Length: 74
Image (tube, rainbow, N blue to C red; front, top):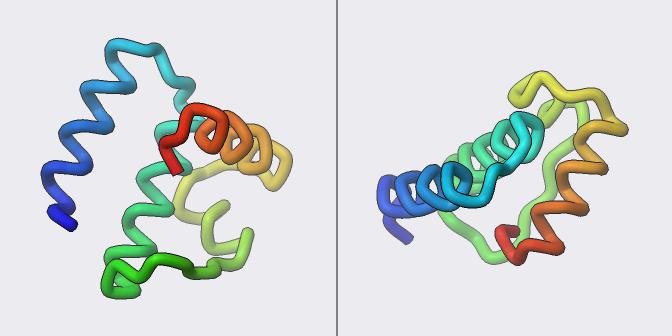
């Protein structure tokens, strides 16, 4: 996976499709975590880590994750 290409493609998508700040923050936190994992297909990360990286509450992360899944972005 090309990390830079993924980020640019996501930013273009977010700009055109009007993603929320929470969705954008969570996507970046997940991408950063997977980059640290070496781009594995499945990984786990504690909600506390995602909250610290994204600035979202647990309910905010759940809402953003649900939207990103519905949009096939994660």
